[in-house]
Amino acid sequence: MFLVTFYSICILSCYAGILPSGTQNSHKARVLDLPLSQQEHFTDTNHDEKVEHNTAYDHEAFLGVEEAKKFEKLSVEESTKRLGALFDRIDKDHNGTVTKQELKDWIKSVQTRYITDDVERQWKQMNNDSNNAISWDEYDKTTYYALYDNTPEPDQVTEQYLRLQKKDRRRFTKADEDGNGSLNKNEFADFIHPEQSPRMKDLVITETIEDMDANKDGFISLEEFLHDIWDSTENNNTVEPEWVQTERENFLAYRDLDHDKKLNRKEVELWLMPVDYDNIEAETSHLFREADKDQDNQLTKEEILDKHDVFVGSQATDWGAELRVHQDL
Image (cartoon, rainbow, N blue to C red; front, top):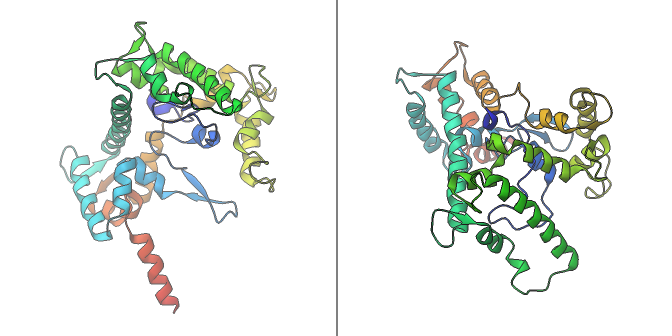
């Protein structure tokens, strides 16, 4: 399924309420497993190149972004109590254990809710006349109001706005499946979340290549790929970190299938949408490895609560830090 297997997301240029600034970190936008989480799945610790799993990713994948934020503010006791209540919802057959399929179904429902909620929120922002469609004019005037409010902008800013406006117009036209010049809610969902729509796949690939293809030859070279993930000037010309070298090796070994040191459309497609990767399956397997103490491929409530910090956040981290300080004293 395209929604599930869309591993690397490249677009998100300036849809619905996000002003085109040109300062977004496009590398982070490409590599996140959205919408499972807006967090990096693995992080460097203390900038010493040690890579460790990021529990914030698990919290957002399991709860959704907004719920994860709420849990972070709870006490350990309250967080654990609410996790126990969630267990009862995940355990669909109410037999006292959660299977991998039940956990997968839950995470998928969280993922779907993220998209649904985002579409609803942005639909309300854009649908100025409260009818059942959003016209290009409505979207254009709301998103690119700076082009119409007679406020002088630097030439380079105006040029950038016009470029992004043109890009969004093309995406709007592609999303307009019935060709009537407006988007209904389903079409609008494809417009702002093209990563979840199979019919938008070709445009996703095109936008990725255009974003990264500096010399405009229709390919993504190794140099262009590396520049996208690590710009030495933006990073004050610091020493290239080891993970960039790892990405270089991965590009040559796994992404550049014909070994010409550049990615064509098919190679970009396989990079963005690997057919053998299911991020929900991967996250489910990870959570089971963390919590399935007796390795019987089922999770009891006790096992999940015992690993509550893996599934949900709380103030436990801060309290643990305080405890260590007092112990040191």
